[in-house]
Image 1: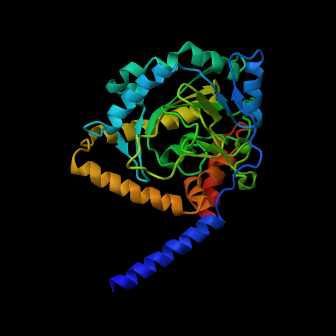
Image 2: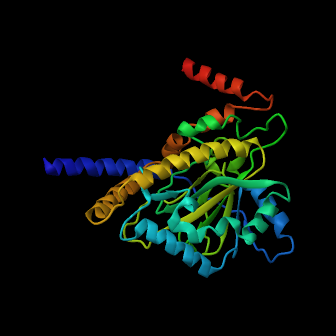
Image 3: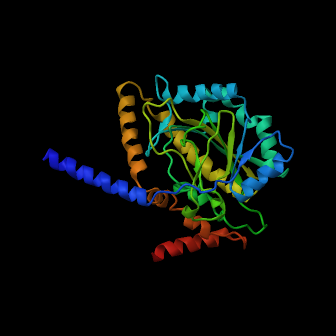
Length: 342
């Protein structure tokens, strides 16, 4: 009986492997040059051009390496200390939602205020008004599938205006996330993977192929949150920890207001769950690692486009809404009517 079960399992794994290979996301044949050096004379214009055309940019050397080492120490202790305090995620890895509100991260509160960051943001928004979008979190070996960063689930109701069309004033969705990886990724593909130019489309143009980012400690990856992107799917129980911190900023308009309301609700809900839970330690840590190893392995074997279909199921609804005529409630009513007809 055991031998028969093993054979069945091997066949299933083989079939999954074949399907995974057939439906894999190809590598981009000619990745665009998105590196930005703040020493260059035209870096501001170059940064805006890369974000506009490709949806992402790689700003080199924004922070000092020793500063990132300090940030990494905070995240490492919270996620992987004697007690694991971070929120275990259903699909693998840990998160610290709204980490800037957590006392243990008090020494990281300089990050969103740093003048070097705001010098870059000033260039991103070309001197126009922007603000904190109230999004900030830490990822610790975060298992991330292909997706676009839109409000989903219960928080989707706050996004009344479709994020691929202007509102009645002509304003558009312009929200960017700034990611700081807390280790070097010069020789691996364990940081972000992106599909260039996918930020202007509700669907993901798989045929373009992906580009793996290779940031060093101190670099910043800035991307339009509508960009199709993914993290690492394999959870490595023997690694030193793949950690990042990210903060979000948007142009001052209704799109950022709506995103902020949904984000605040989501982060407060997740943070309350995290703080209420008993931190993991001892045997519970080993069992959690084993669970994440299995989940991550399944995620790695599963076809990326299938996982994306599940993760981005709310994107089509958001793309269909429009505030161009100034009445988002009618758009939401139309969404509900379409859903009732299915």
